[in-house]
Amino acid sequence: MAYDLVVIGSGPGGYVCAVKAAQLGLKVAVVEKRATYGGTCLNIGCIPSKALLHASEMYSHAAHGMDSLGIEGLAPKLNLAKMLGHKDATVKSNVDGVAFLFKKNKIDGFQGTGKVLGAGKVAVTSDKGEEQVLETKAIVIATGSDVAGIPGVKVDFDEKVIVSSTGAIALEKVPENLIVVGGGVIGLELGSVWMRLGSKVTVVEYLDTILGGMDGEVSKQFQRMLAKQGMDIRVGAKVTGVEKTKSGAKVTFEPVKGGEATTLEANVVLVATGRRPYTDGLGLAEAGVALDNRGRVEIDGHFQTNVPGIYALGDVVRGPMLAHKAEDEGVALAEILAGQAGHVNYDVIPSVVYTQPEVASVGKTEEELKAAGVAYKVGKFPFSANGRARAMLATDGFVKILADKETDRVLGGHIVGFGAGEMIHEITVLMEFGGSAEDLGRTCHAHPTMSEAVKEAALGAFFKPIHM
Ligand code: NAI
Image (cartoon, rainbow, N blue to C red; front, side, top):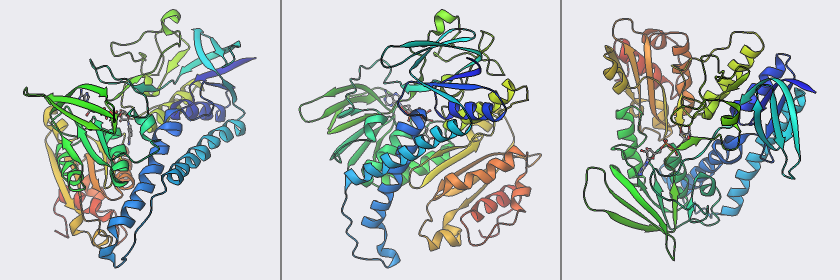
């Protein structure tokens, strides 16, 4: 049977594209080599890590955080196996949800490894080695990304002692010591999980700051907060070796500016130094599909590769490696394939780090505006001046709004604080509609809420905040 669309990969980019295309009347098939749908995000990434972040935060609250609220004497006992069970159950309900969506939208699922045989043809090889060829009008490559490792350093991941994020969400025991290579999103989120459960965590980061690329003020304050929680953060340090030892593993690093090397030992080492586009075994070279110099599938403004009829989206193409960016690309591409005008606004893609407190950001950072020579205004409001935050003992952090000096249009929003990952969306919606700091500052916000700090920061960018 011939399809309108065959999607290779069922992560957030692939499955959303498939569902949207089916909703628009296309006959769709999805090829997935994993036993379950949902890709890295649902199976071993975003979803399981959030289950562990939530559970470990509850544990840490019960262990340390309730005395000031008048709740004393809590002595929680950790049942790690049960906590991991909660994570697995969360994954299962999410991946089952995708299977349900496929059924509901009459999408055919093929379990096996997909290979592009050229425009219009995809071979699927099952685990048993049986091959079948699907005929289709369009092919979407949505194969995502894989662990990149450390450039120039041999890392033997065994996912027990030297782990990537995959092993770090499944440790059977809380390691006494954990070294995290890379102070990016994965390192800080999963480092936080194990720190809350009792590990002594050391983060070794190449750049002078953690969360490189985030607004400088935000990452600086956030680094201080994590240090206060007990995370040992070494910045400006280049890791040059990760090796197994008798009792665990050792990490060697040297100052980026030059100087003596340091070696630290730990029970477990998490290497979180980025991800690479995953195109292994897809047959792209044979099919004539061009990659760029970073191994990403090259696409035009309509997600089409250099071969007509073959498209790509998500982590395997340019842009931030974020599930929601892939999802929005999936929707846009499905619309294009159905003859509509699909579009993604890459200037307004939020990003969230799900630590405690959370860090969330949308649009430009102050550093980016400076570099681009844009005249801007800053409005900042600390949660310490917010009534709800005081009531919840969540006064750490602030909201920062950046607006164009001339037009008052909001160009960026940055939040570090409890619930930042939810609050960022009002700035995101405002920016999508081209709104100004005045618009946001004049929008009535319920009292008392943490979100009032967003309104106050906007008032600060426009004129002056009230409560400061
Ligand atoms: P990342 O790119 O966020 O961070 C990797 C860090 O490793 C960088 O700060 C880099 O400077 C550092 N590094 C590289 N080589 C090093 C060396 N030799 N020594 C010391 N440090 C070194 O990558 P990460 O955390 O692995 O995440 C991968 C992708 O997954 C990212 O694109 C991220 O956006 C995405 N992701 C997003 C999440 C979210 O949105 N909450 C959660 C988890 C992952």
